[in-house]
Length: 307
Image 1 (cartoon, helix red, strand yellow):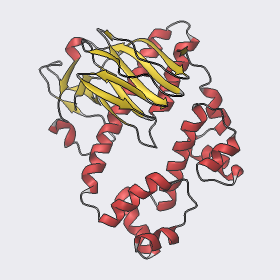
Image 2 (cartoon, one colour):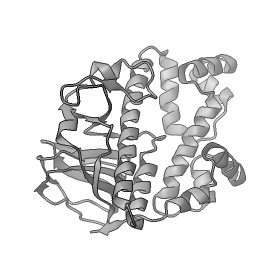
Image 3 (cartoon, helix red, strand yellow):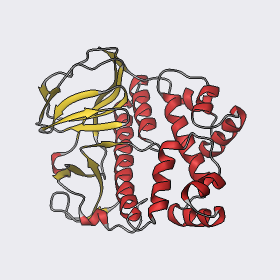
Image 4 (cartoon, rainbow, N blue to C red):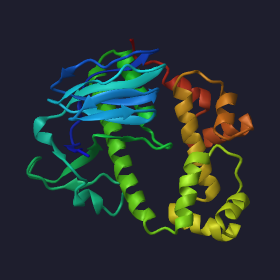
C-alpha cells in the first residue's frame, strides 16, 4: 500500500471533476498523466490497472491514479456504473510517497486533530500534513460522498473565483479522507484490546444497523446483561448503543439522499431502519441541523459525463 503524505498548509490545485455514468461496457482509457486523479465508486464495479497493479473497485471504494503512472481499464463494466472523479495537482515539493503510515501519524494522541511533523521534503518548519492511502473502502459513516458532491456542485455553478473555491473544497475532501484514514488506523489498533464479543458486536452493527434492534436483543445475542453491555459499549466507543446505531443510520441516509435513484424520504427512512418517517425527519434535523429535503437540495447540481 502506497501512502501520499502532503503538506496541507496550502490547498491542492483543482483541475476538473465530474460524475461518470455508464449503463454498460465502459472501459477506462489508457493514459499516463502528470496530475493526480481521485475517483470514488458510487454504484457498480470498475476494473482498472493503476499504480503497477490491478484493482477491482465496487461501491464506496476509492483509488488515486498517481502522476507518471500508466492506468487503463482491464475489462468492460457490466450493468450500471457511476463514479465521481477529480483531477488535481500538488506542489512537487509538498508531498512524498511512503509504503506505510509513519510513526509520527501513528502515535498522535488525538486522532481528531491534524498531525504535524518535521520533514526535509517540506519546509524546515513544522507543517500541517495529511495522509492519503492510494486505495481503500469508505466506512458507512464517511463524509467523503457529501464532500465530493459538494465539490461537483461548486464546479458546476462556476462563477467568479470558482477555481479557488474548488481547490479549497477539494482540499477539505482530502483532509477528511486523511482524518478517516488515521481514525480507522486507531480503531483497528484499539480493537486489538477489545473483548472478542464487543469487537464482534461492532462488526455486526456495521452490517445490521438497518435492522429492528434493541439493547436487550443485542445483549442476548452477544451474551451480556443489557446494563453491562451498555457500559462496556460506551467505554469502547464513546457512544451509547442507541446513539451509535442512530449515527450509522443517519450517515447511510445522507448517502442515499445524494445518490441515484432518487428515493422518497419515506423510502430512505425505512431502508436505514426508521419505520416512522416523522421520527426519522426529526432525528435527521437534530443530528445535521437541516431537514432531509433541505440536505438533498443543498447539493443538487453536479457535472455529469456519460459513456
